[in-house]
Image 1 (cartoon, rainbow, N blue to C red):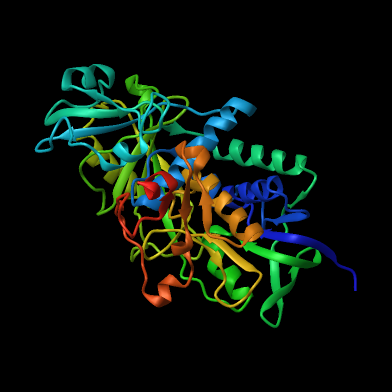
Image 2 (spheres, rainbow, N blue to C red):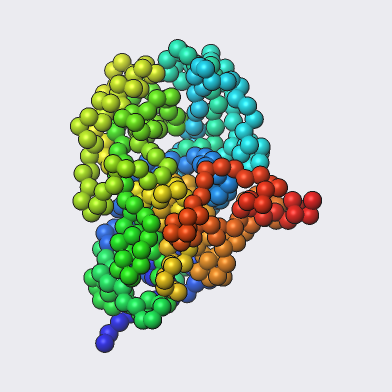
Length: 424
């Protein structure tokens, strides 16, 4: 029987799969193959708005955000990667407090003019001069983060693909779905693809919202839910708005939070978001209505016109993508609960663009060194590591769900182990 071989097979060619391929090759893995059922970045990654911002929803998220931001600075410096640093803006409305009280995340992880946490306090007059489309009613001030922004997801995945292939250890198989996973005992023996049989040493499931289906091919279950997310567009250039930062308003749209960021060319993108799996949004990722519901752009328009002055802008249909979500809102980065050579890196809940580098480094640590301790020394500037064992897929059946909270340095629940604090 004819077959090909790979030391590591990655299922999924989005930002997680492609960055993992690069990181694994960089860390010494030998022959790696990436299978994508269509084209790289054609799934959730391509539908992403590419936002790079703070994810302060617990210590794990904060640490992985720092790793991601650190990687973007490297890509900008070494490969002239495009990072649109248009910033993010937190507008504080009555009855909010301005200036805001000290932020625990900023105190612990911030510092320096180049930090993703670097911020400027804007009094109302200064805020409205800089962002004149914001209506003044109820505005008490704002916090502007100039180092945040957005990227082009296709450019990012293409760069990782080029860097991965240049190692000589990575092969990308486009339009090559994995159709069957064959097991022997407690491990995967081979993959049946559109283009034949592959004998593999290790398999990484990086299939995004298709992750549970990939697990099913191997006879495993994964607590991952595909959910539809809408993004609509406004023609802000009709009102002279350009380079708008990431921001939002203090009101939901159809019961759902909505972010907004400027886009190249002067449009505005408005996107749904929720941090955990929610009822009413679950879909089959292969059969998804790819444009907005008819009522969605008018609903966004109705809310945002109350806070922003956009008299000439038109709110138009945009697109939809599918997130892989989890019950507690945290990723799954772990060995499979049944199979010894099967691993998962899924469930980014829409945060993959910011977190991808941290996830890729965690995957490399897990697959190549069989440890869940991720070195953060280069990112935090001190000897420190992140214990990501809590991202185990089995937490959903054991009831050990994670929560969005910041653990203190002295807390026994902290996931960051720092030699400095240990010595103290």
